[in-house]
Length: 109
Length: 232
Image (cartoon, rainbow over all chains, first blue to last red; front, side, top):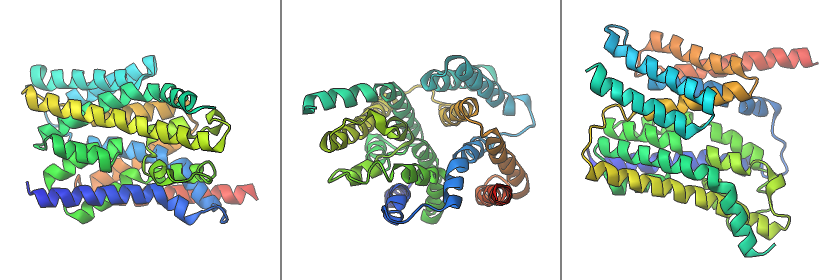
């Protein structure tokens, strides 16, 4: 780990993030109308991106031995069930993570 | 409305985010510690980046020491949705004064969800700005407090944190389920998963995100064109 490199990465990520948040305010500063295509993408993209991010998180899961995929599989199901049942983000995230940690530390060692 | 009333109103409004941010912030602090980054690093991220899911990804990017360009592309993709929060807040933030830059900086998913409905704003313009500023500020405070707690817990208790990184997956699954239950955009959600799986198989785990984004944009554009034609 190189401290300078890490600091540069954090700065880049911070700048990109704030630019994304500020961009609409800079471009559509009242007078210009937001194009319909932009509004359409704005409507739909969040749903597709979250799906993509789930796949991104699970990209390293392989389907060889049971221990490679079963902990993730079980834990994702538990998060989904907890969320459908309680609709509380904290319960779903904490519950699923604890189950996953238990599975990879104690069951599928 | 007096300042005191506005502060109270903003605090009550921000309460639902308090628990979520403290817990998720702790998860981030612990994850960073697990990746070898201590309290100062975690706090710098939470003060200057202030973007939940992106900070979880950041912990991975730091540990992997990726190139700045890769980090920029990743931040662009993970946070692209903020563009659209901005679009829907243009009108509501139009008359904001000195605090506007901070309001825009702090427009996270959760803050957006609290402030996107301006029927809750105090009637006076000045009160409304103070209200939005405080909700944003309280949210960031919760996030920073959580991060600090997580970083300290990670440093003090040397517990086995193997598997803690699943909290990021769990967060996204939670958002996915929430969207699935509350919107009519199930096809978009499946498009995201489908495109990502196809690209993962074709391009492999280290190169599939950009092709996935392009594929998603292509599919959405095609459906926009189709809809546009049927509208006329």
